[in-house]
Amino acid sequence: MSNEFVFGWHAVESVLRREPERLQQVWIQTGRQDKRVKAITGELESLGVAWEVVHRRELDKRVSGVHQGIVAALSESREWGEDDLYAMLDGSRRPPFLLVLDGVTDPHNLGACLRTADAAGVQAV
Image 1 (cartoon, rainbow, N blue to C red):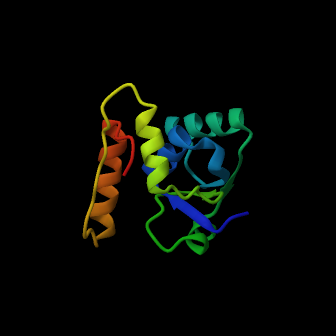
Image 2 (image 1 turned 90 degrees about the vertical axis):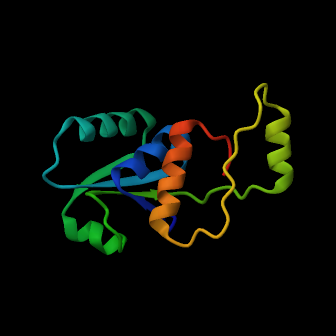
């Protein structure tokens, strides 16, 4: 299993929507039995992704950030190069929609940019 983790509901849901093949395993904190948990676990089961309900301390061991009660282990992501970007854009019927960032140092700002890009349908960051 990889050592790349995402955590937090929005981050895990984004991977589930965009790159479900990267999901290796998901851990959910005990005590949550709401619609959001049922929806995610249903999708995970349909994809054959292992998931487990664990105590908060198990999640705390895996990540150091605020995990919101959910952590996912991912397989390594593919590294994309400039040639891949050109190939992707050449094959698109619509004008390119890209997000270019420079000098972002605050992880909260980066997270906000990525969530907004995801919601807006940006093709590449």
